[in-house]
Image (cartoon, rainbow, N blue to C red; front, side, top):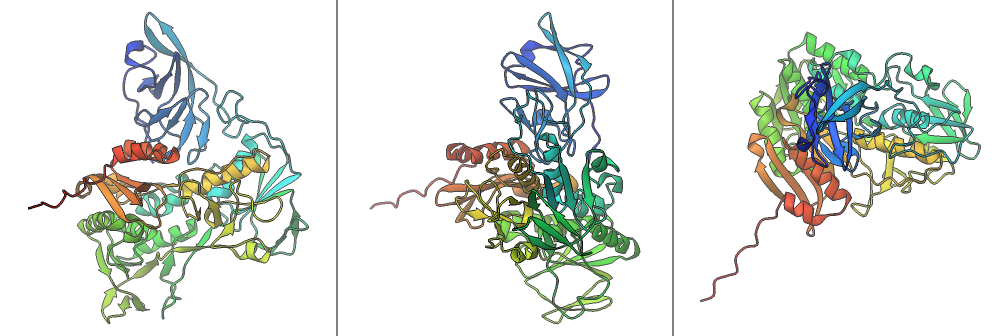
Length: 536
């Protein structure tokens, strides 16, 4: 998280010439020392906060489509007319100011009153609608990205009945992506981790029930809790998330072997890092490599053990995998690739080839599996996840699923997919909440995620979904952490990853949404065809 810095002209004292703000332009400046952005659409000019309310991304460097601005960092969206947060990961609206025009210049006047982030969506917002159904109550199982976003959206949509979120994690909801990044690296304070301040959910009549759900009766619309109590619902959202896959080798049960999923897990790894000097990370996954980067930032000796020949090759391809490996090696990480773990002892791990790597503690990052037990027990349709339709409805009446467990029909890839991305989970939670209230909104978002290694040194932004591809095309220089990679199959672009090129990632997102292959080809041109064979 970065501090908000005011840059550019003083819009109150000096204003800005209208000629410097053409249609579709955005300009950053300040008012009374506070960062403000001007945006123009046609003859209308709007003044809103210059920084995204998620991680303070510079909105003027983003993309304005109609009256919606997209943040260049993590693709949150806002309505510049109202400041409304339209899409996660931003949950709070932007502040707004009044705009005045005098003598060919535009000036920013009084700041408008701040709005409650869960106030009903304004009628003049592009996402405004009125609920057409109102279940007697809504129960949400899981307070992760999808569950928390859904609970908030119910209130923003004007739902007034009881909302109960059930989760045994005493700390939830919190900013899970930060657990392996700045927080673990010691560069973010713990007070930044909760999504909301104390008392926020009670103030908005969202009941956080710290309990474990053991059963689900969809015919009676009833949830069974571990303490024997039951809870009836009018509509239910399953957002149970995923859990880390555990190692199955001798010694994996030792107390110095960690996984990372919860805030408590991150705290435990931090405590280990403060006491010890040598860590082994098992798995070259996104989580594993982000943990490795964070521990190196803390000056620990870090080794990564993984069976693949390049980290993340199966997700990002050889070129990005090689870039990330080189970056980590430059930072002092030692890789043991093409290796599997055979045993964990008190002060070392042994690989299958018999070699030994010193380890004061071990962090396992070999992937996660969706928590499907409740859905299976309830008889919901399961196929590599909880099967949902385009509205995120399960096979049971008034039961929806969102986040890591949901397998939905993706209109962009043409198949059913399940992904484990924070932004996707939040957006699915928001869509499910609106559909619980009768919106009839298809979930058709293009998946997006980011992975940060050593801060901004090499943040990979990825938009789209490519499980398999027959070629990758690249522009730029990945060795300098500056490039764009297109993943293509059958002449079609499935996904785009960028490093150091946020604007191109936003452009790719829009092109993927619109199935605009010509724009994607212009963004990342394929190599020219080989010359025809020479004829004698």
